[in-house]
Length: 238
Image (cartoon, rainbow, N blue to C red; front, top):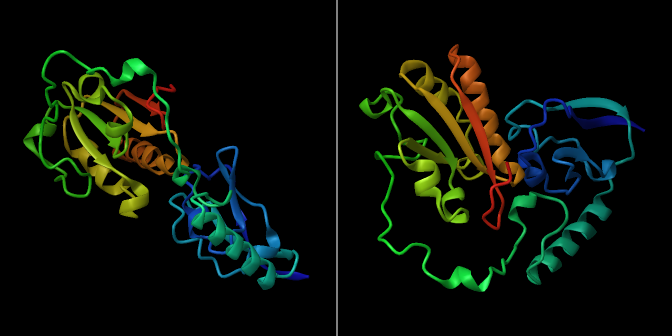
């Protein structure tokens, strides 16, 4: 039958996973770091996934597609609810929400350092939503833009990444906001020397990386920048 259904532009998709989380029917999965409509009969055509997409990768189209199968959706939702009760996660939705437990080596139980740890946070506030767009601490700053979880996943965050930098943090999934405009103002209106992005490996962190990249481009400045990805068990991946 010909009906309205969503279309996902893979070239625009940044892998943030917000659409998969927003799709209550479970029609969208994350495959190879990209959102894909994998169950056409689960898509009701209402577009709950559209507003959350930060890159505009999702649109409506009318084409030949299986009819919406409400009964199959309800069965899948019930199965998901049962799996959640047993502390497991449905394969759909955000992969970054999947529970994991890490078995660290025995030496990890020893003290991380022999000296007293020193905070390298150079300013307050540090949340992207709270920090002003212009401030004295931005003058000549090396800017670190980090996902909230990185400081908990990576043990030496303060010494290896925060030291000597102005650190601002955020989570595009929890804050439910596109940081691009504010980051553009910070980079454009201050003497920023470099930008380091530290993100987690989970797809939703792609929203933070994309916002920074958009801000760098919109600022009109040519500033050295790099991305460092942290695994969920605390390793640097790249």
